[in-house]
Image (cartoon, rainbow, N blue to C red):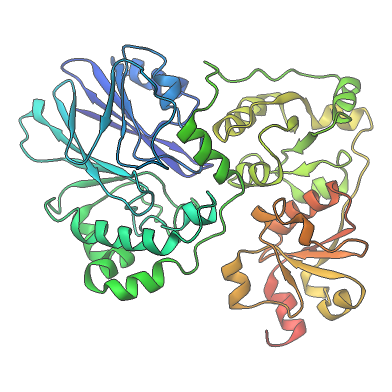
Length: 474
């Protein structure tokens, strides 16, 4: 048996290749949409992908299961446990498809994979118990836990309500999650490897660990919410829904397209390298937006393309910002630091369902053409006076709702930066806005978005504690 973990550091997502070296077959678990990475990895190891599956209908990226299953020789194995609302709508009468219920098995060469229904994060969620029969094993070696059990954390049960728009389901989902954590893993030994769907930095939990894998025994001993579910269900139910991060706006789109089906493109979209004149012309089109992907927010502030939004490429903020500030139908023009950055930018957009990429240009080309003409206003948090700001305008707190609840500037409006587009109607117009977060990073992104929509914005750059100290107790 061959096991490989494929990590996307920007979405903190793990996919897995499970291969039978005797037969040359391989299974891909939880692939992202740009599948060339998985096919290349299989080829490097002398394998062919014969099956694809996913633990659940994902909210944070477009699944690659449909892309991989365009090859009719690839067995498609998906959950049949979701009920009417969360059953796959795109499989149709596709041949070589197996819809899985609790306890069902399928084989990849001499490797047995057993479905374990673990609802709570989502109703259809499955874990996959992996046994290397070809290696002589009669007991499992690993379990792919998706968004059910992470290293140091468990999946969040509120996304159907906070991201997918279903009303009043978070509490019942939490009860399902409790039952799954308490009852569904009891027959598996402590030595079984835990292969989680995400790591630290994902919005699919509160405090995911940065260690890529674990064991059930370790998690039983040291995973606080898992331990609480086993020992004190009432306390678990009270704690699990508190402090969850506000999901990016694009999560709702991901749930829909992964359930109902996304366009199959067969390859990454090709972004055209534009001249400054053509770039500027395209930027004037309705519902077309310029995304400035440079890392340095101070450099962006010193000069950027008019009405562009800041989304640093090599960070989790790129997907979160573009996926929160734009809609999937919008046209996107990319400003990148180098031509070599285009592939990464296109991949990250492709992974969250943004395919309408109108073209790109480097920042040096834009600078030489005199296009970076707009500047941003900012004030250091250490010298920012909240009382004075509130006297002349409004203070916008773009931290998470949980951060705001713990401490905030009295009179500040709480709108997490990932929810700004959906709540734009709540943002005061006709007066100056002062935008802050905990460190200045999220506020820089939010300020660029609000400025692109015509607001008068000053970015409060620096630690929230500096604002807090000047104001006194919050």
